Image 1: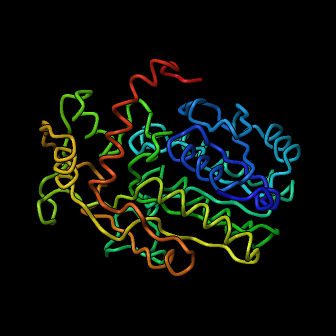
Image 2: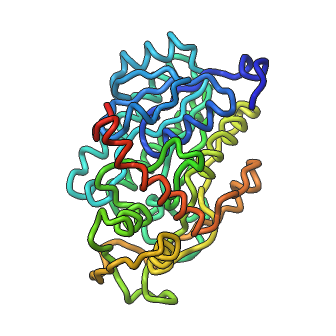
Length: 346
């Protein structure tokens, strides 16, 4: 727990999208570490109850430039963690303009207000989707980005924007490229609560608890050890720890920016995940074998040597069964939580 003196020396942080899955975990980590916190979220997908009570909550949109300017000024914001955005790949293909608006245009507006207000530090939620279908594994930060969908392109455009802005203005940034995020807060304070989520572990846990009647397995003929796709899963608590480490690094070296993969450097197949959920939950999941989805790669694994070399971050919760257990524990209590707060939670 941070001392009162340490808390007074910490700059106020604005977290956009702090009522969502990853954002709410970041808010808890910031509060636990003693950072003054302001949360901006329009609650289109997030939940008001997921924001810790220690935070100042403001309901509004990141694209509302006048509101953002007022928040930055009134609260003396010294750093921004930007989680707000849209994240569903198939939806990005069907509705690309939504993704370029929410992920790129709104980010440009936020960065512009940050520059105007003199906010010196910016942390951005990027994604491994910028790599597309890379030819070699694991992917490093120097792997050529070739996104194959509007979601990945919208995030890559924001990375490019941040790089250019940091060259022209007194601001530094860290773009964290997430791999497959899973799990939940181990104290049970928040977790993946979005209805209709598409994350594999979330879907499999819902099936194990009777909330779905099956799990679709897309592709069983990949050149992997069991024919299903391989992904690098990272526990959400480890992911948000990387954000805290990045924030401290940006403050310590204001002349330096970072682009870093956030993964464990290990891969699990779809069947590995289903077997883990079955093992932890003690039930059998019905599987429905489907053709490959267009654009899915056989595997996507992070080379995480850069984040380990450049930040003090180290994985703590890398065991697959542990990620699954945390997800199951959260899911078991979610129905009662949503019944209490309402499914919108707004």
